[in-house]
Image (cartoon, rainbow, N blue to C red; front, side, top):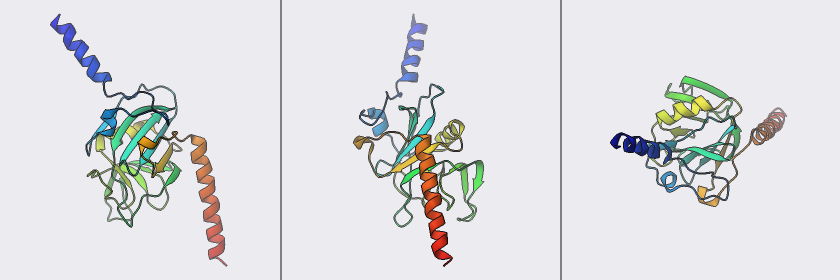
Length: 196
């Protein structure tokens, strides 16, 4: 009997951190909203639904979805004043497990997932629970490793100034492609203007 109770308790612990479906109008589980710095929750069923990521600047959290189901959440550290993390929908452009910064003295950026070609990425790093980076999105190392394993180039990442309490719809690959086209168009216009 005692063996059965231990197994039942372990099963409850295994599923307890799992937030329910977290679409725009759903409330997030208290475990997610009260995460301490360098903490995360992960409960992925490994379904075939596409993965998307929402980074909330005011919450200083990352929310990972499969379809519209919240599968993981983590504290983050985004860009400090003057080095703000840009807002928008970005596709993951490049992935590198053992990357080093070419802008900041070869600083290590483990499990780097590039969002912009001018240096903004999601990667493992110091996570004090407030904006402290040069624009990157720093996450706990184990979370970065798991995130790296479930994303691909093109995975959409929404960086927003909205709080989870306000709600949102997770971005789709089409959103990321549209943003990429919009960015390419803006860059082309900027280059054309600069060459005049």
